[in-house]
Image (cartoon, rainbow, N blue to C red; front, side):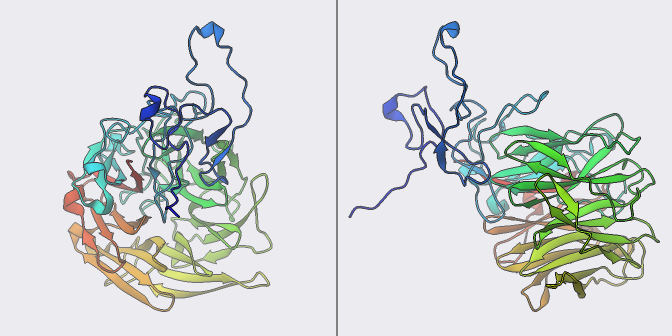
Length: 511
């Protein structure tokens, strides 16, 4: 029998402009009863259209080209055939963008991408990395580095949209948890990058905006409300994670000058991408008081786990288990919390690998090293855990910490940073379930960066954010096997002193 061809019916939406004989195989002339739905729980299939109130055509005096919730070619709402990349695959383009919450201008395209000036880098998959000028007044994100898959082409600078993205932590302790750098600034889910944007100053009543982009559109999803417990106005998102159909977000207020001061409060939010609803889960720090910041976040064993950060020499960082509920989440009081005391008073990275949860720590004092702990929960609900990896590099300096962990090609990778003697050592470790092996090491002032690890399709990337934001340089690495790392810094661009790359990376196809 002849070969069977499966076509993505309606994936490119409705095209009412071209001659019907010239329509692409994935385009429709019209679609009355079904549409291509890429939202959660539908897997990108064609589904029956929900009912809509019809337009009264007569008042318009012409054919109606819109009104239904579907893409129309030639507008910013059309997702095209590509989409943002997932953690293990290319994604499906995401659902057609809506108008966004009140006050938003609606979805807008990447001007240098597929719906703007045409494909770049010969139509190759695009990798976007958050960027700012590094100046104090614009430290919150001004643009994006754009390069091709595996960083094979010299990067260009895109000033947006989307964006600008926002950063929230740096070696200068300007904002965001103290001196332990930044945290992954977004998450890819169903072909969309969800990230934090909207803050352009440390003063004023500016609220964090949760936005999403797939390389074709960029839109406001939700705005984080003010914390009623706080008298301050500053607020920043610290971490993203996913569980089931939801995106989970940690946020802290009043971090402009003192990340863990007496007026700093943290919250956990659950975001429903389908409805754009943001729910405050009413989870408070295990200390029961302000000054304990919610930082890393991960799903494990049906729970969401929040890592705390104290930034004090006497505080205790706790790992807080949270049970998702229909309405949001509740603290798992039966399991309780696990505490990290002296000298490790901070949890800085969390990752699920195999059947265990791995937690990286950080220090606010010198003389000791951060660790990675392998945690697990017994059938009776009792914590077990042990140190499986210790940082290195001369003497353990203040702020040595594990910045990032990610699973890639069935192995766990962890990034460690030790800013010893104003020079610094960065190490990327590989764990195969039995042995930890250092697969990349750099040292010296030019290498003074903690790396943040990302996976897009079959490539892993390491984005190095300057430890010293005003004089440091970005560093960029890539690997396709987890062992051989290529320094891509020259191609992506070190920029001028103080130019900052964010721990924010996603990929999207242009065709």
